Image (cartoon, rainbow, N blue to C red; front, side, top):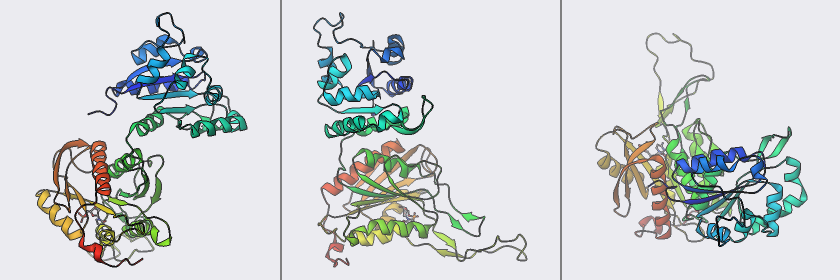
Length: 429
Ligand code: C5P
């Protein structure tokens, strides 16, 4: 089911020019299936009209604390109680100050004071106002009160200045709202994810690679962040910008990827805590040129056909799985998840691959099936596990596949499965 379907969202608008971007946020949320109630301060109505807000949200805009249409004068209490999420965008310096002080002198601030559930604010103001000690104090107070923030961002402002204070784009606020509403099943957990292809260089201008877009790993990283995890993303060359909030480790070749993965996974050796789980969705090249030529290989340098000599790359998944039986210093068991992209006889091959690589869970994907595989937005996955699990999922968007996978990993971490014979090995740390 669509995440936003039936979600009740109150959108509070303050009086700033960024109010125009909020209209796009309302449009997107409504399109996604949310029920929107716009609430505008008197100053917000200098920038947008009640009619615009009503036309875009499908609900009359609320603008007055004591509206004649609300005979009991309880609109602010009702809205504060019923909303799944309250988003304030734009949150001006004045609005943040009034919120921090607990003022309730208009409908929006009154309902913010009556609110017990999550509130997300998207500040927008001139950089000098954002940097002012008074605003810094107010932001600190609001954070301590549990208010969530999206932005502000750095860039050119309507006032002509360049600096921090721009309201975040609607897509960023939407993602922050989604995070605010997602149950934190991975709170306190660290997750390592690999994504994308690797690139194996032949010479300074040529390389061997594959069709991986990195989309699956990107969705897994986003789902893990939404679930409250800290995420290390080791990513081969892709065109996707990483999700906001990940610790990114960009790599090129399989050997670079192995180095980055091990340095994150083994971090507990240096007194730090390593990740609880690794989800390896990268399409790692199985072979690399045995030698990388320092000069461009010349056409016709060899008579007849050009022969490339390839050397096998290290199997990162198999290596991590061999280490995963080693508990972290605090006794936690770790989980390693692999992916198997197969063409035909996917389940049998996937079972064999999980055993050979030794991972706990494996997401098997028949990339020859319609709608599944590289560059598509959907995937048909069967999740199998060391504990005997064999769960065929229907064709789902990669976003939903990622969400299910994160739920499975969280469940495994919370309820470690069968005793693992590898646990008997001595801990090499
Ligand atoms: O053997 P195959 O490439 O089908 O295995 C796929 C799984 O193994 C994926 O999880 C992939 O990230 C991982 N893998 C790896 N290192 C390799 C090859 C694959 O970690 N050299």
